[in-house]
Every structure is written in C-alpha cells, then in structure tokens.
Image (cartoon, rainbow, N blue to C red):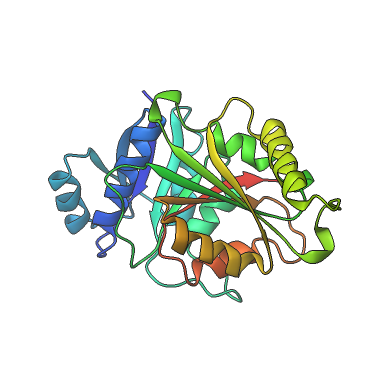
Length: 249
C-alpha cells in the first residue's frame, strides 16, 4: 500500500501533522508512516501512539534523511509541520527543502492550523496566463476518484496578462473558464473557476478567507530562476490553511 510520510518531532506541531497526514492519506488511498529523524522523539512517539499511527525513528539530519525516503517507491506524499512563520528573505523551513528535492507533493502545516478531520474542499491557486497552468492537471490527478472532493480553482492575473475579451464580457469570461478547465482539468469535477485580478498573494489569501478550503494547493518551481517560489513563501508568511506544494518546472 502507498504511504504518506508524516515528519514528526517533539514539538507541539506533531499532533497537527499526524491529523493532516491522516486526512491526506484518506484522499490518496494510502496509509500514514510517522517518522522522527535524529532520535529522541519520546513526545512524537506518544503522539503517534495516541493517533494509532505506526512510528519509527530514522537516523541522520532531517533534510537529507527525509529526502532519502522519497526514493522508496510507495511514498506518495510528505506532511511536515512549520514551527514558525516563513520569511520571504529566508531560506525557509525543512519543508521547503524537501519540496525542492522530491517529486512527491509536500504538505506544509502552518503553526496555528487546526487540520481538518477530512479533506472536502481543495483550493487550487495559480497565477499568470493559462500557459503556466499545466501544474493543475497533475495536482488534481493526485486524488483518487472515490475521494469526492470539491475543487475550486482561483486563477489570478495582473492587468498586463489579461485575455482580450470582447464587449460581451460575461459570455467571454464563461467561455474562457470552460476552455481553461477542458484543457487543464479533463475528467475532473471542478466546482468552479474564479478569475481574479490583482496581487497573487493578496487574492490567494482572500480566496482562502472566502472559500475556507481544507487544503490550498500551489506549484513549487524546481528551477533556479530569480524570484522562484516568492508567492508561496509570502503566502506561508500569513496563511493558516495547510499548503500542498506540487513540483513544477
């Protein structure tokens, strides 16, 4: 059976990480594997026992040890707690280091999050033109059909990248949304596509407030170009919704 790795330590985030991992595992049709890196882990072990989740200790430093687990064929996702707020100018927590190095999706659990018992609504956030939205297909394909998820896509443009609509703005917006979903989410039931104009960070955070998703999904770029992951980092500074990072190019 496939596994979701829950990276737990002796901090207060362990219970939230395990709860989130259980919710993710249900969606993916997987089981939870609680892992503590580097020894110690008495509190983490007790937390895993209360959650009735298998627990093990892996030797080594956290980042390389967790990345090594990605080579195991049955690992489909990682769930990692965020002890403190990410700062845009910083390198980010272990979670972002793992997201840098693995192809599996990584779920970051913010420090002040109350994880859902079950994932029912997913908000998929994207910025830029539809040509940059190829990540959507992979993101939505992660869930097994029986998961019965409500999926909302928020697509944020600035004024310079808006499609050139005709005078029939309402009709053309609907047509654009239909074409977008046909191209990037074939066979996936998406509740709706929201088109927003403005700052990607602000619009994504507003969408989280209005939609109240159980998970926010965003792309995490695997390239070294300037500004890489800036929107994700800035969202992590403020969001309280667990963030699913999907590797993109």
